[in-house]
Length: 160
Image 1 (cartoon, one colour):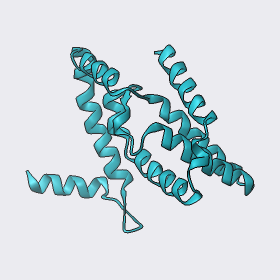
Image 2 (cartoon, rainbow, N blue to C red; image 1 turned 135 degrees about the vertical axis):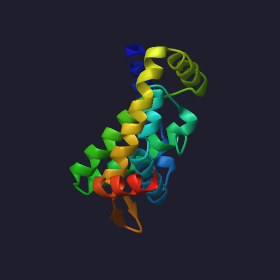
Image 3 (cartoon, rainbow, N blue to C red; image 1 turned 90 degrees about the vertical axis):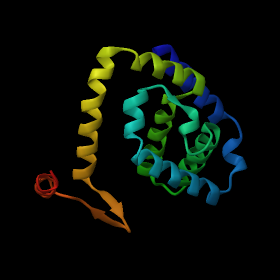
């Protein structure tokens, strides 16, 4: 697994060293990075199921385009003196190391799910994740919408 992370990091470095960010306009990069940010907000379930070996096709854009857009925006924010946003964007590059070829990821997924120990642990983890998301809430029309634990219990008790 360590070798895989090193290889993925090297791949991202190669993409970063290419001219991909120069091929994107600032507007394109900004929109791609915004979509990437939204994608990251909702990736928990995929991460639980696949771990550090997620199929690249799940990404909202090809990895090279995401790297280019992230680097373009990081450079833009660096020029504006906004190191906080630069750091945040650079952190998301690390998240891309979890995305590997579809074939390799699916083979690992099948192997993982054939393991009874993993299978027994995943179901409770998925339920807990759903509950956590419900209580953290969701942004709907720019407002945070949450259902309290008490209200969830009240609904659940009346439903059954």
